[in-house]
Image (cartoon, rainbow, N blue to C red; front, side, top):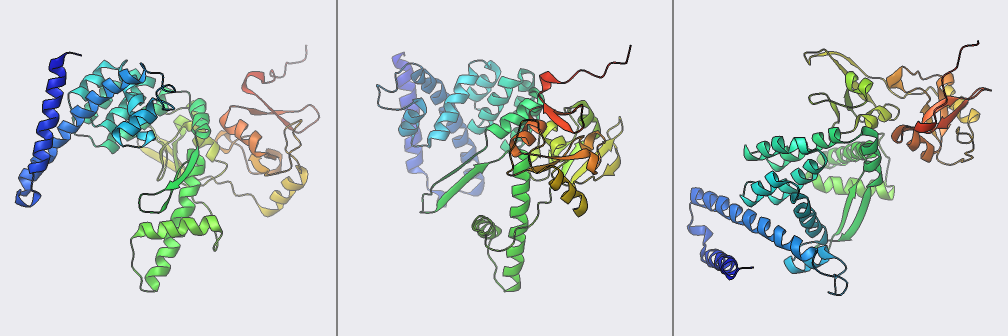
Length: 395
């Protein structure tokens, strides 16, 4: 590296250090403070962009086991004082930017925050056609949330719906770790279908505790009641509300199997989801179907539910004491399933209901397996590449 480059960086670091030491916030007017926030933000973006480039060079040039670290992310975390997860995201972004010159240029030019660059890089790697549109959103003053939401929608369209639905399920995770002030911190991410139900139940329990506190004359921030609600639900303290999930899905998207730009496929409070997930949720949640005409106007709203009469439920449970798939004898955690989905005209009656174990239920609604009739009556579950041929007419 040329000595002049080192000199420039050292000078920039020294000048920033001097400025940080000289600033007295009490002597600044509000307008001056706001301008300095903008300038420091620009400095931060330049520094992060440069660090990403050189950190990537270190990451690919060292044997980390011999260097005393398990991986490059751990090294960068120890060097910068950030979490391993944050360091990993920075290195991952730097790697992706090597194949995205437009985004890399925008980041080096101070036009993107590290968070915006990370979202855009991840999305543009899957869908290169979305890169220019996402960069325009950021350049026009779009917030991180606006960029993130556009990235999520682009991600939904960039991959096969069933593949993405499966990936969201496969990447579910929950972690607990000590907080800086002594708390126990819980971080979790769920696939949309389960996450929507978790959120609904947690919101309802929070409302319950909030109203009880107000009635008793206690006033505290809502997030405190959310923490109490989560603890009560996990520890089994009191009743658990039933999930009330609203899924908005355009029927044209459901029939096509994926959503086009401008079509609705999202869960209230969760955001965009794969159409395959939305269709599967027809069996597990209250759903709002919105029909639209070619101009995009809503022409009809319907709300099918999974409500199963008690007598029919008992019949299904007696008829299917084990999983309905041929060869599966699981008796645990069986779930009532509509053989023909509600979205495809199925009905909630005996001939269209059976029970599947959790594993086979997931295969049917997230892996493309389908119910196939058996010669002697009943149903079996077959994978997408082994569907039985249609009946042939008699010669």
